Length: 94
Image (cartoon, rainbow, N blue to C red; front, side, top):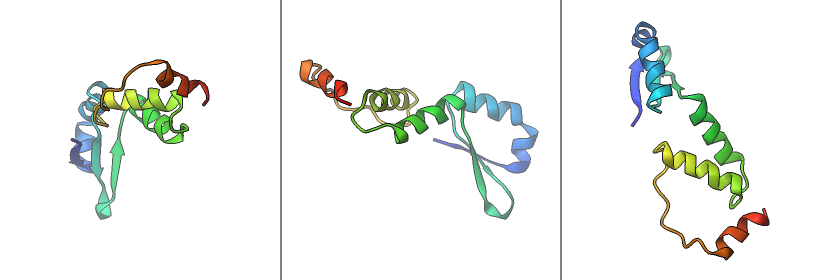
């Protein structure tokens, strides 16, 4: 669940909010003037999101990105898949 704060409070406690984003994999939502909102996330989290949306589905890069997002609790865990030769061969053709 994201942490929500105001721009003023974010400025006062910037170190604490940045620590939460980087150390605890939290998303910090900062409401600015005119009700616009910005999100603060860690570089690792951003890279995992970018990799997931830019990777070809069913590729090894996509599977790795999904695993990282699951580890970060952004996505729920996938159902168990039988790890036989056919499963692993699907990634070689990508």
